[in-house]
Length: 194
Length: 187
Image (tube, rainbow over all chains, first blue to last red; front, side):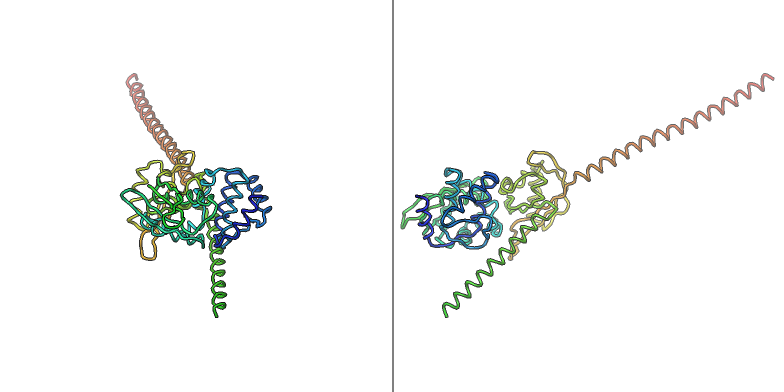
């Protein structure tokens, strides 16, 4: 019942997300849980008020942003996963995402990558804004601020893993943490250290 | 007027999405079909893409090898370092023989070719690496080498035998002469 209410609420969220995010979710489940696990997810995805048909999602098409969060919650609920697994799902996504392959020209060096962080966001979501607010090469730290995205925290857990892997395409040992911040208005701060 | 512009914009966006989808399908089919193992590496030598032939040859899945350093594939990391330096300076490297490792650390002799990728301003943004599996060629090469060695042994043996026969014939001839002379002297 709680989940159904949350779904209705999430579907009211503005913005859109690329289909590729649903495909990387499905692929992760398939790899981790096998065909049987994926079928279970598909069954659960068809039961909800806004069903997700994972097999017929189009990579480049835009879907309601709320549905993207619903997909994460659905995976979490179906398998009883903890944040750790959701983070790993985000961490694995850039390895198979066609969007990342299309943007390969930005994984050249750290300067190019950090300059293009907002582009990575815009290519995947029409909601919110991701901007780099600090790059400290001496202390090996980059801070990016994600504003105007107020959804279930599961999304930020996923993003933490996703961006960690993205940075690791340039800095092999980089780590990413996302924390809530309210310096001016509530937002999420992404701290990347290498 | 505004509604017309919005409608056109929406139409263009839909068309672009559909073209991107087609392009994605084409890349995916090519990735599946290409019989030659290939991978794409960025300037900091991290593997960003592989095709299915690559997965089959080295037994790595996409999620296992993408994001790893190229040197992980080399049996001798020093060679990886040399190749990485060379491709940052040269547009192409053709048919370089080396040894690669599978996921199970099994050695595979390979011939690799590399080609730089550049952006529209001519900056080096990464490189393709194609791999030819030399195991079958090496097996045939070894078989041929063994055959050559066998033939050389046989050659030496037969030449040696011929020389021995000639020596024996000469010995017989000399003995016959001696015998003849002995007979003559007895008479």
